[in-house]
Length: 344
Image (cartoon, rainbow, N blue to C red; front, side, top):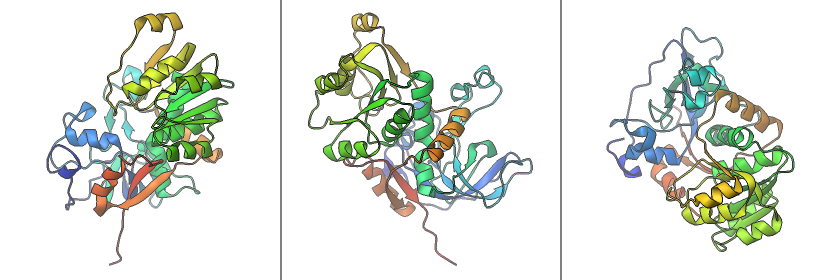
């Protein structure tokens, strides 16, 4: 990063190969997702307020281990791995209680230390997880941030189970696609709300029972109520869009759960407290995932044959185009940067 702002502050430059600490591994990056958290990092917003010039973003790289630290015994050179972005201290009260996603010293690869928009990245060995054989590097990068976060929201925050009805907003995005598949795995009926007819149609292919194009039908609460007359059990709200929030609250059933994990479309919504206490609805925020959720999600993803859709793989040298694609209304799944290497 040569400055602070939008993707224009990124440029290609030579940097040293990262040093590897005793508990770290060096990964030769093959693919890394392009995420909205990267945009926040460039602007020094939220978690990234302390980012310095020269920083390398990229939270979810996947690649091959090429070096291991002196104290590493659980990873080996040549192993294909995907990086869990969240680094926890392991000793605070949150970590010892199994809630390491809320660690007092929480740090992210690509935000608080150099990330995967590079040929090599050094990460703690605990954050490097073996990639299932059937998965490509690009698919592994698409999995890394989205599926563990989603499984944790559905299972722990919303406690979704057999017979529940789940509404997913932004359902064609990386987190949304993961939520549709994970909710179906947990036995729920799923309503996928996406921003275009193309995106809504694709959600049916991921298992949604009903797909809604809120780009053409912005007031869709009545359609949801026709499908679920007593209201929905849970909503995974990924956007933070005020106009979607109005529809969400109109569709909730009594004692329903709204889990919020995104705010990139506005982030400020109206909340009627009379509605809140009458319906007994719970509203929960969720970010990141625990190590246990990551391991569980990776196993579930592989065993159930789930799909981490990759919209396209863009060469690292064309990173500006990759960020442009984040705003594509017909995009389904993750935009991924891929390393293009030439033989010597």
